[in-house]
Structure formats: C-alpha cells, structure tokens
Image (cartoon, rainbow, N blue to C red; front, top):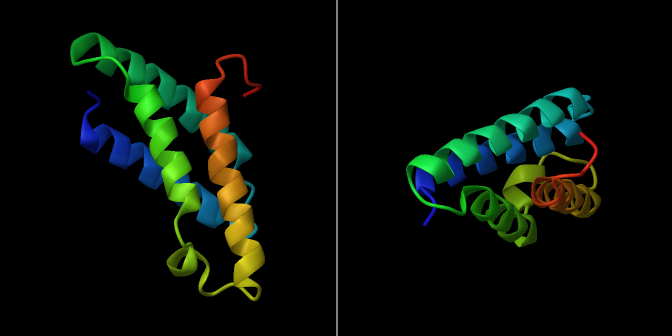
Length: 104
C-alpha cells in the first residue's frame, strides 16, 4: 500500500501546476521535471516500503480531476471552461505517469 503522504504531496504539486497553467504560466518544463521526479521517487518508495506508489498518485489525480473544481477556479472569468481545462490537465498528468513511454 502506498504511503498517503507521498501521494498527497505529488497530487498537491500537480494540482498547483494546473492552477498555474490556468493563470497563463508556462508550466511544461516544471511538469516534465516533476513527472521524472515522481517516477524516480516512486521507484525508491516501492523498493523501500511497498509497491504501487506511482499507480496511487495516478489514480488520485484521476479522482481529483473529477472533483468539483469550484475552489480552484473561482477567480476565473469562465469557471466552467477553467474546470474542464483543469480536469484535462490532471488527466493528462495521470496518463503521463501511467505511460512510461510518454513524451516528457
């Protein structure tokens, strides 16, 4: 079973990047770096604790993407569109984590 603090830390980081992207900041370099760090750290945690850390982060990102984004997009001119973009961003990150051959 994955360590909860590990999962929370990375999900929080990726949701923060989603918010920055929504505000117009180019987060792609940071995103690529954080994906690589997540994979590396997950491999270490799997070795030392138990398997499944990367999968747990990916699954939690999918859950987070389906949550009501009202708190994250409340200052946007079009909260509905911002929510859709946030959902797409988090789903893309989950896909990148799940697919080792994803372009980073």
